[in-house]
Every structure is written in C-alpha cells, then in structure tokens.
Image (tube, rainbow, N blue to C red; front, side, top):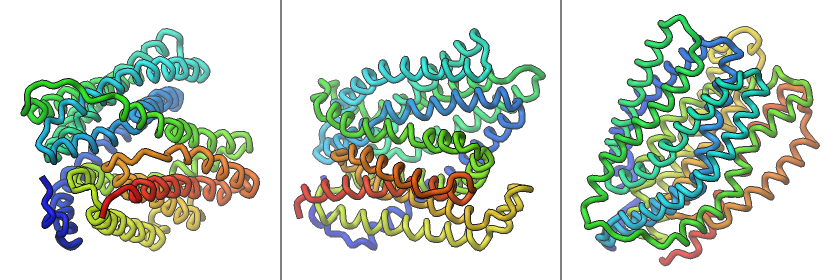
Length: 430
C-alpha cells in the first residue's frame, strides 16, 4: 500500500531509488547485449547474402508479430497488476485476462504473418519445403516469446527484475554456445540458426513462467478479470501498431522506387551505433516501469516520474548525440570505405534514434505503466501527414534526403505519446 508520505517523497529520493536499481541492472544488461551482438555477427558471417536475406525476413516477422500481438496488453496488465498489488490482491486475475486476449490475438496474427512471410520467402528464392519449415520456426518463436512478455510484467510488478536479467543472460549464453557450435559444422545454417532462435524463445518462456508462478501462486486461484479493458486497450493501440510495423517498409519501398539502394545500406550502417541506447532502454523498461506502476495514481507521483524518467532520458540522449558528433570521424572509419563523408547524416540518425528512445522508453514507459492507451490511434493520421510531407519535400535520391526521412519519423511517435500522456494525466487526482 502506498502511503501519502511515500507519495510525497522528493524527486531526489525517487531519483536515488531508480538510480540504485538501474546500476544493479545495467551491468548484466551490458554483458547480455554484448553476447547478443556476438551471436548476430556470427550469423551474418556464417551465411551467404542470399540465406541471410531469408533469415532477415523471418526474424523481421518475429518482431512485427510481437508488436501486433502486444498492442497494449502488456500496458494494461502491468497497470492492473500494479493496482492489485497495491491493494493486497492477487495478480492472477489480471494475468489470466491478458493471457486469454493475447491467445486470441496470436490466433489471428500468427497465421496472417505466416502466409505473408511464406510469400516473401518464396519470392526471394526460398525453396517450398524450406520456406514452410521457416514459417513453422517463426511461429514456434513468436508464440512463446509473446507469452513470455506477460510473465515478464508479473516479475516486474513482483520486484523480481533481477530474475528477468539473469534469465535473459542465461538465454543469451545458450544461444551463443549453440550458434558457435553450429558455425563449426560445414553445412547450410539457415534452418539451424532459426531453430536456435525458436529454442531460445521456448527456454525464456519456461524460465520466466517458473519464476513468475512464485508470485502468482501467493493467493488461491481466482477467476480472470473482465476482458473488456484488455480488448479496449488492444483496439486502442492496434491501429498505431499496424502503422508502426508498416512504416519502415514504406521508407524502404520509397527508396527502392527511387533507385537509391545505396541509401538503404547507409541508413542500416549508420543506425548500428544506436545499439548503445539499448542498455538504457532495457534499464528503464525493466526498472522504472514497475516503480511507476506501483506508485499511487496521482499527479504528484506522475510528476516525479516525469522528472526522473523523461528528464533523465533526455539528458542521456543529448549526451549520446554530442558524443556521436564529436566521434563521427572514428565511427565512420569503423564502418569502412564508402561512409567517410556522412558526418551530418550520422548525427541526424543519432538524433532520430534518441527521439525514438524518448518516445518509447521515457514518455512511453509512463503511458505503459499507467495503462494509458487511449488516443493511440492518432498515430495513424499523424503518420499519414508526416508521409505526405516527407515524400513531397525530401529528395530521396540523395543520402541526406533519405536520412532526414528516417530521422524525422520518430517525431510522429513522440507527439502520439505526448497526447496519450496528456489525456491520461488529466484524469488523475491531485
């Protein structure tokens, strides 16, 4: 139960609480990201470009399916479970409701994306039999990964963030061991590498569920919550997520039609340095979100969260952009020949990465923890306005025009998150 005294604590004490948890979380997260990066680089080096293109199609489907299968369910779960925890009630009913809606959503998303993925694989040279196996492996990855995210919300609310990081680290180690072992075998590695991804997803689900059940079984089994809030959250966010999934493809399609394939490669290369923000994103998503969800639903508590999370993230993003600008010569040399003169483009990509981080992991974390999904649909008309302006004013035959298009896209999400936060904030009590 949150007391008025706790709610009235100073922003400085809130900053210390977040900083303490973040410091303990960041070390393991850095190691996990290094292992993940190593696995990814081995996969790239071990396969031909043709096989890697098929692998990229399959893994992109996993990510897109996860975004659509979530569609606000994690947000409403962490908010509902946080309220139940504060009131001394079991978190089982909200979990069961979210799990049921997630199951129904997966029954729609997985077959739809499976057919689309099969078409892309066949169109890009994949054999019929191997393409069918790849689609099956994609489904075997998406389903457990989507359900594991629900258990992750329970672990966050139950103050078991350390479990999340150690499970993630264990899975990353296992994946790297399997990838290295397969790399040493002289054979086609496309299907084995996808199988490793599916195994890692299943292992993560098993471990997350095992630890989350300790929290969920602290009360007798109960009926699930009413599904209506979860379905409403899904429909609030689904239009935005559909466009979020489609927007990168629109940019790639526009550059392809323009014949500027070089810009596609340049954007992908310059964006690699944005990976340094992943550690910060993981810390905020796993540490700050449950703290906000467990705090009282008042303007005072939300103001503290805005100061600590949005303020801190803005400072971190500004530092990232400044360092990128100062070290641009070195960073471009790391990328190799052909990128030497892209200093301005590199900084713009860094700014775009920073805006995306602020939208998703600062403003978005507060909306997520409070369960504020209303007005997520405004992303769709805002995106359409942005697309018209970008396509009619930017010269996509140049690297600068292409980079400006990519770097400006996160502004749509920033504005959407601000609108969601404003609507939710107005409904709070003092």
